[in-house]
Length: 387
Image (cartoon, rainbow, N blue to C red; front, side):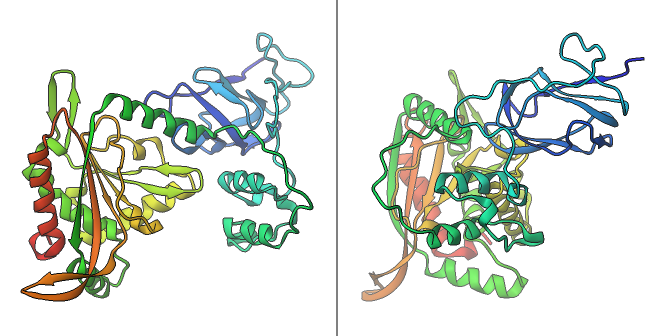
């Protein structure tokens, strides 16, 4: 009796229509337990493990690694050991075929040894032309890290001659970023206001708090705490414009822009206003790490009401950040450097950080933008105002 269960690709995120197969965790013929990880897929925003809703033997893979499946298409078929299944009506046959057509440079199965590297590291190695079989992994369990790939690339001999130009397809994440940025820039009239702020006290307090709590205090955590009372005072900056209505959010779900190998990812700290500084610090670090290894779940990259981008972490100064679609403002913080300033009639040296605030000019006028920035600068200058 044929008891095979067809498992179709579920909608695992808002607006998801398709996903790319990154890695099968259970081969055809292998056994899987109910709720055990079956396959790793890449959506527009994250790499996600999908669990099996059935226990049994894997009879069929709906697509090879590197192939994109539509939501609702057969992802896998689970049945009994010894049972076989065909895509032609599901009847029992001698061997289960693999569907999907490979095109171009698609890598249907990872070469021997690449299982020791995360998908993002495998892509990075391909971009540098590094064969992972020749790379020694220094990560946990012998996993190959980004640094291992970089060391291998640096030790590789230089090419004998200049190579011709090449066309490299954008990754799924980069295509998604491009679409979102284009829509925001096209539909939102941006205005950006700039200011230098004395960050001496903020950075000194950060060090003291790290010693008090015995843990690292990311700058982003302090910035979140500094900005939330300002958002309460000026709710237009924590809002969504929907047609002729401005929806003022009474939740403070703060997006934190993270620079990754694949591009800029913005995980969201849900209910940031309800967190203590140690908890907020831990959440910033957890989400940042998950963004870098592409392990964020879909719910962790949606729903931001305001966004913070610490471009100072990569040496940036002033910028013109693009407002994430569905919000009205974004704040960018540049790297703090020693500069001379006038204080109490004398010139002194202080750590000065550049701030750049972009806002939706349909919602916020220049005067309101300047008032928001003025209160925020007061908080930066004296953390006692918000801690």
